[in-house]
Image 1 (cartoon, rainbow, N blue to C red):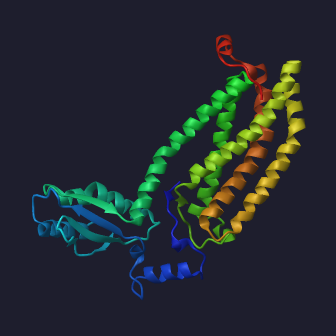
Image 2 (image 1 turned 180 degrees about the vertical axis):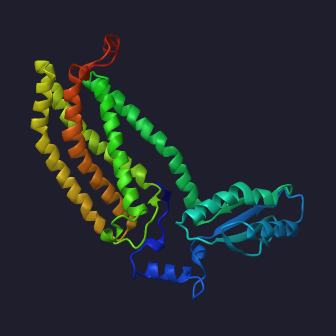
Image 3 (image 1 turned 120 degrees about the vertical axis):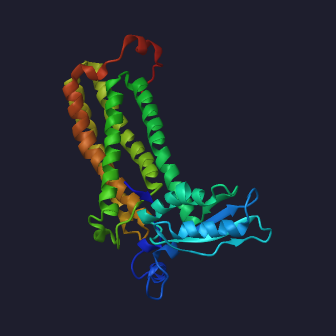
Length: 331
């Protein structure tokens, strides 16, 4: 999955925003090249510089113009007090291109530090595109932590409620499977362009950086809702009969229709939003619709009862010492 930011270049063809974007990005004609839609602004702090601003400007211009992926660089200019040097770096690629993100990393990690080495000055890359790339990187780094915390919390809660270690572990693994599958559909449709014409997309786009995080929160809530609904009925029958096969069959028979109807309603609602002109809304709508369908059919009505049937009494295993220490509660 390649996270990024979706710009006006992904707007519907014929819209005013898309027309303006295309005209600006049309190199060799009336426009200025794709990078003009997402330039970087380089700000150099000269407060502790040990060489003159003119020399720093020359070094910056020389290094930046030779950097791969740079279309052109504006002449560096100093501020009124002479303590700041500013220049604009225009990439050869558009804002949502992987090449622009690679250029940002190259500038911040290599090019700018090399140009300012030994001068005492410090450089900062800013602008809307730079901010979006940094936001993407931050979300990408934190997403595994967010998912991990939620999964651990869910495991602990299910352990307390159902007095089992196997059931919570299975629930967490299957919820993670649903989330991963829905992410895969987003990558195939939006990033690889499989069937993108059906959704009115003009070209493949990266996955908006905050969409996976929002999707996980919503999908996990919905799938855990189904999980609790199904397992609570199975657990009730298990406590009454101590017959695992009967408990699984009864729980599935009494909750299957309700889960299916609820999933159909939510799927219809989510799919209705795929007609929105906003690409991010299409992403969320399709991802949520697919995840609900998978979770309500493949996971809740096939995998969960099948695994519980095969595991038998092992479903309800909990060490006695742990059972004594955990608080007792019911759904």
